Length: 378
Image 1 (cartoon, helix red, strand yellow):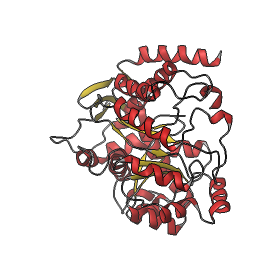
Image 2 (cartoon, helix red, strand yellow; image 1 turned 60 degrees about the horizontal axis):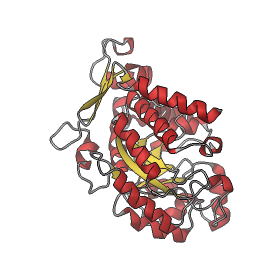
Image 3 (cartoon, rainbow, N blue to C red; image 1 turned 180 degrees about the vertical axis):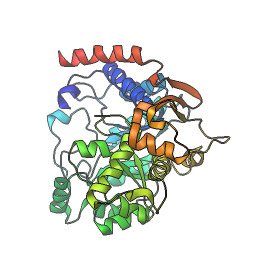
Image 4 (cartoon, rainbow, N blue to C red; image 1 turned 135 degrees about the horizontal axis):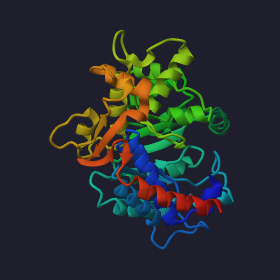
């Protein structure tokens, strides 16, 4: 990652981001929560325009046609206890005042995008001190707050060594965690922490493909859902962009852990695909829109109704995986048999952006991406 960060210019940020967003749309996602780390120039100095790179992300979202929740990341330290960041992290690093400026510039950057919002993302408990966390949470102004937490066992061990508590335990006791919060990964959670997260109303942001790819572990999803917990799915490392595969990976991880079938179906005889889809749709919408945000209710229910964004994914009924499927069988077959291969067309806010499985600007975006990647690898 640092190899690319040390060479990536604003044009490259826009080119790479635009192709990622196009591939997300092709994979069945219609809205992205952009965990936006990169804020400064190659030397780690603020751009003259604090929103330079936020504007590039917004431009990429506009070009691709995806919905955007921009989440500027506050990152100040390399480890728990306020340890100094490394030189290679210089493009991420901010103090509270600098972050506030970037946040205001980010709000300006997305203003022209219909339905776009700006939340905040304290990177993790290892990258912010308690005092910094307390200072930046009010800057969200009621919008969503995302934080990486308890992703890996070493993070848990380091947090215990620093505070005497586990990361999720510490956060629940020291912040007023509520429905605005999205706890990203939360992989290593105890039963008490599962109960606390569910009771708080926070959404857990799961990235099952990434978590499997990195060998992070398995989130106790069945226990969390049984207690009324909410989850959304997304991608962290972007090793593969496929909404159905994220849900399939989530369910299969639970089956492997419990040596059982249809773990997240919710009840005997219910479609597992339906349960996964509806849970992810509801939780994902809450993680991307504030509770009081305009249009949030319509997005959360997934309903086609006046006032809701017309975000629609159609599937190719001619594909063998969908042959003779009816009702919930279609969702089951999309998630467990076909994945992105059956995504036919995608509309975002009523605009058709994917046709016959391809983003309408894929060739142009791919050309820009190839040119950028060639420069980075030179």
